Length: 286
Image (cartoon, rainbow, N blue to C red; front, side, top):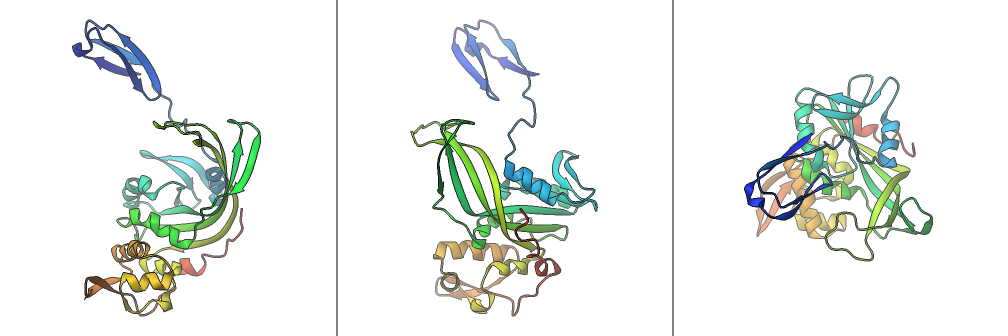
């Protein structure tokens, strides 16, 4: 139960207290009172089909799903005690959790990168299909650096395996505003996310594995972000984000400046880890 103290400043005031989606109308309070609200049950957030499907894929023989572990709940614990955390959202959300667990446990963080998305529009929640179309947005392996920016303080770690999977998904949506303050006619809410196909998979165990996403031999031994952008065919801001991840994770090192541009040195050659050599064996497992 949640007990809320109401002060004298609310005397003869008409106010609305909102907490955890529950509203209590407080009218003309003359003395301090305690208002008791029922506690919100935990674990009520709807789990998308995408997350359920990936848990089933990574749950091998004798593995367990949704296992309490101290103050946390782990998506999958395999037969060897490896903790598997599947994160469709931003990696920043699980950063404190991973830092805490990696001090004593082995972990695998699975991060889907969306390549293609099919948008399915319903007339209402749980209603009939109105239209289908492909999303104009698309992703590739370079999109993974947008997430690795938030994981620079976690990866690499001797107890951590990062597994990125390139996926095609289906997003089912219906008209709605959700919790938006500013409402528009084009607003929508997502009813479900469905896995269509796992296109590719890459595992990272050490910092140099990050070069699996880059044209390693095309990058000069000493380079700046302008040269990196040219090699990737991306704009310089994207190259700066990639260089930041590589530098903070120890894959490259700063070696000076050329004018105002920072110079970085990459390794002479990329050594493939055991994990990266076997990273592409599980294509199209959905």
